[in-house]
Amino acid sequence: MKIFTIIAIVFLNVTFAQTNVEIKFTKDKEVVLNETTLNTNTSLQEITKILGTPTVYKEYPTGKINYHYKEHGISIHTVKDKLIFIGLNFNWDGDKNFPDTSYSGTFKIDELLIDKTSNNSIVDNIKFVDIVAVMPNLYMSNPKVESTPIVIGFKDNLVTQIGFEFH
Figure 1: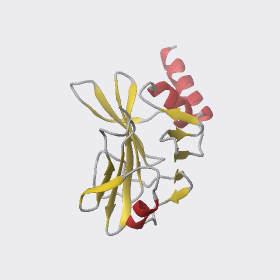
Figure 2 (figure 1 turned 60 degrees about the vertical axis):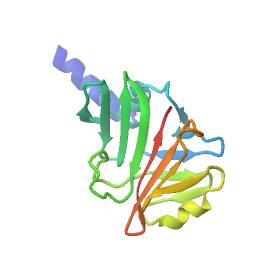
Figure 3 (figure 1 turned 180 degrees about the vertical axis):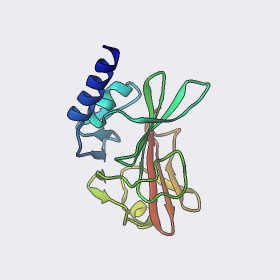
Figure 4 (figure 1 turned 90 degrees about the horizontal axis):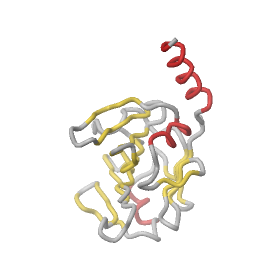
């Protein structure tokens, strides 16, 4: 009976999880996943309703858990089942905190469409939040100013990952 229940839960997650993924970072500085605004109160269960069941990549003694959605190129981190980070891999640079697959959905910062062909000039086109170079090929908004800091990485002039921290 237990195995039947497990199979049914997995089937329901696969059946009802949305396959088209759209993530937006709005002018209101909100991260929106398929019409669901993400923040520090977002639970893992809310995300699995949208994306399905993730794979646990790494568990820490502190309670932090890193998950991968390999089929979507998405990484999420939680603490006590609450979201603290979501990241998208566009061109994998070896960072194992991200799946090695490319993000398969649509991603926009305001109206700026970003995909795996985007280069570091995109940073200049983001106007509603200050993003600065913190080191070569790594840009970030100020976590002391922004409640949802953005981190953007590049390698060989192409975007590698974009992530959002939830404070």
